[in-house]
Image 1: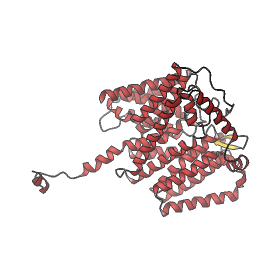
Image 2: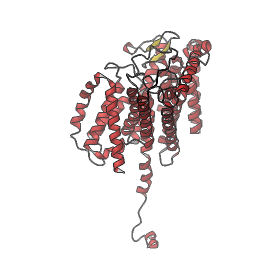
Image 3: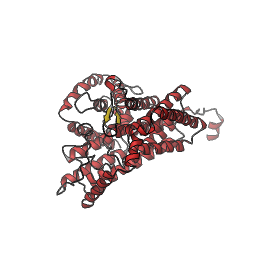
Length: 479
């Protein structure tokens, strides 16, 4: 078992090194970020206590989570604050393994996450060994707002496969390692909500023509869709739709002050979906809200909250002409289905039929506007099956945590919200090309953090049970 664990950890380290290589020539700047970690590593870790290195790892992960949805903030070239924070956390995690090998238990990913990353890497390697005669010629559906901002393409097939596998494996693992207590799970969740809320608020105010100094959000000229502090309106819509179930799930365990706050957050997130113009975010978000209410067996309190949110939204329609909301205008003008994407799907499927087993390579992971079709085109059946394993296992873990009597009610409710949030993403990427972005994997990391608390929750009742003494009736009967 120890040999297997060490081999897996070495595999993660090799994958992390590959991820750093694909970042580009600015990777040397990360050295200045981890210098403090080297000094902190000199502080020894003690059993049962968090070392200063562990605290620094949590701080780095917290910064990454808070800025995950704010990916227009790029202090170093194309690297976001979240990228820098995650890379710093990765360096600190490596130092933690050196300073205290027992910390490897926290950094050990579940088998299905490792298998997914390995499957994607193997798919990329097979394309490298058996390259296609030519690349597919698809309809030019490139979105200039993505160009040079979200890392949708890579220089080579292997670089793209490594980048996707590293993102899918390392981001959840680092978030889960930081979310190592009930309090920290809740804190990281609130940081995620706050980041999405800020971006949504900037978009809602931008729709009204209000700009907050340097926080002016991205605006797309065609339908005047708002992107908030994200690089694309679709990302604003998806992050808002993914956050709605999480907020709803937290209402039941909140006091009245926080319930008022959450109702306001819900109203802003719904407004952000409308301002984004993203039709799939509206559809997936609606399904997510219905699903989290169904899973949570909504009480009268939750019904009252929805009524309050409805009043806020209805009141907003009197202030703002509903027909001018970008998502309503797009549906009214273009309908639900985009004909350009239908043509693109047909062309992509024709390309897949020509090479269904191996694929054409991971150089571009945004070409088809369908994550499942894109993975099939990039890495063939193996890449698609790996991602389906990842999706099914994530949802299974979420449902197990949401139903476990060994977790406190607030964590069970949060697990329902996170599971629904992930389901919203998996539904939305049927027509979106979002699979590589770091923010997508934060809810998965939080869910893995909750799952890691299960053994502790199961052991706690046994530890609190009184042990029979030698003079007790129990011991007398057993003897």
